[in-house]
Image (tube, rainbow, N blue to C red; front, top):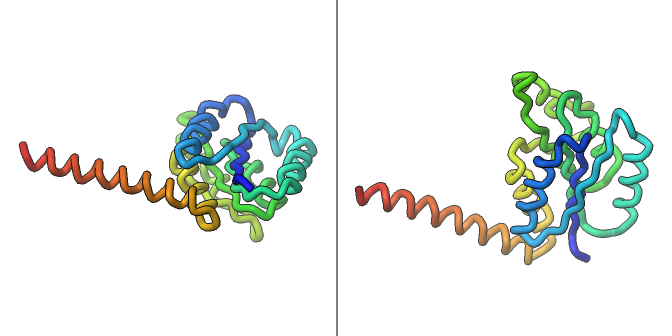
Length: 160
């Protein structure tokens, strides 16, 4: 079965963050679905959504996007067996202090926290790549390209 990364946002205002993650996942050959489901405002809807994902049998890594009080990541993590990556957007309004709600979770709740959308996609790809050689190869290819860029940049610098 082809893996899936459900990207669950707390509100539509996080769509640019969600699209950035979805775009990065395409580079690894991973399908994603962007959804809106607030832990605070629509908890029953969120739980129903998760039950649907959990029953479909595909390998998954969930990515959650919520700022301020990040109940979304904790609620998702506490109700799924698959890994959860919290990718909260930075807010100038709170000078980054809202990120603490993603870092401190109760015992038994353990979403990973990755702040960069492309980094969240890479983390999801590495997790799914453990059991999927095509995804693992796509990650290795991306890493090789990044290495080549660094080497080329260094060589160009040395020539000047």
